[in-house]
Image 1: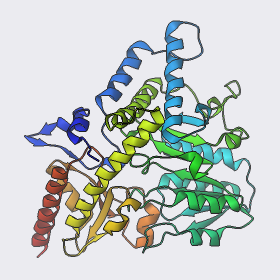
Image 2 (image 1 turned 45 degrees about the vertical axis):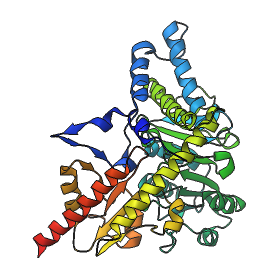
Image 3 (image 1 turned 120 degrees about the vertical axis):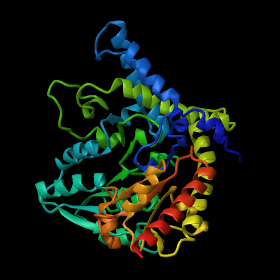
Image 4 (image 1 turned 90 degrees about the vertical axis):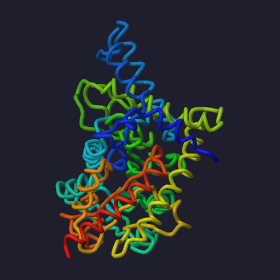
Length: 421
């Protein structure tokens, strides 16, 4: 199935930017993607035409409420929720996870247990660790398997008991790129009576999320990782969230999802969020899907996953040719579908930052460091002050950009080795 990459790229103004005659190559996507023109237009239009607080009777406030309502409907379609009342929109994943952790903590007692993985971003670790410190909870650590690069079901089952109240896990790693079998892990945790909180920040740009099928209780993602504005979205299963008492103002709404959305909403960013979902629907329509918005989104992922997987394997194959370079994640071509196109590596004797600084100077944008995957680098024995080189592909990247990046990696490493000798 063909993927019209030039038509896709034409939607993103940032992809045409150049510095000193060198076009930018955006491979910093795990930290945040560029946005299509339609997202920027929606944000601007909202600021200019629907810029009012909510709850009044005049035209602008009524129009602003419509923007908020449509954002919740759009994300319900994007995540496969049963309805917009399950969609909570806020500042970002970490802030929202802190808020939800405190809300859930109201129902926990000293000695209750929570399970955290060694594979998660710190945004799905520190909120729970600090909750445990505050309430006297027991934290049990779930490592990932260094052969499969995934959290294994047997390892989770071994930690569960009648005191387990919550399992926090990620859908895909922001460092190794590995995709966990969330549905199977969730089933095991739910059978033990635990709530399941899933960080899908890294998966949502690269795969169709279906919260009903997964069976989890909460799932969180970030719009700026899937071509939208800087905000976070938390899905909560209705029969769970309607029983919770969040920290909120006394006089604010007790309805869903309003009771979890503190203060004045980011209305203009919600307009951009709806436009980001519309971008996926347009991509699916261009690939031949004429059904509902949800079906168009599913089609968009069908075509973009195949395209991204080919780029990821191209990158992995090229990096594998470099001596003393270790890719920290799945490299088997038969398992490329078990990872997102985020590839991290270390090179013996070379500090990752020195590679990245040089490549950034060549207008190839990528990151070094632990990237808040603190537990992963600890488990792998990687010095956290150094971390890894991380290259993250989005579906607007091209094979030519991967070739140029590989050429740069080879040349920079050779140069740094020569400087050391």
